[in-house]
Length: 91
Image 1 (cartoon, rainbow, N blue to C red):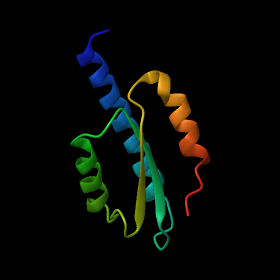
Image 2: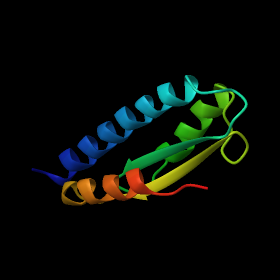
Image 3: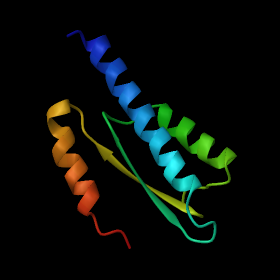
Image 4: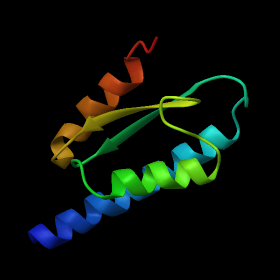
């Protein structure tokens, strides 16, 4: 599989996760701070796009939501990173 293909697949997976998380945030209680866990292959310009999209919906990182970023550069790391995120104790 080519590097471009892996990058594209990682991007698509990140977008799908983000969309799922957006739906979760939208259903939450408006008065409480929501925590969003994001797993991606690594940082990129899409991070700001995600924040912008959330901001348009009225959710501001650090104000009424907290975004917890986790990086999984390869598909082998995804299960481990997802488990760490799932059991994380967020205060």
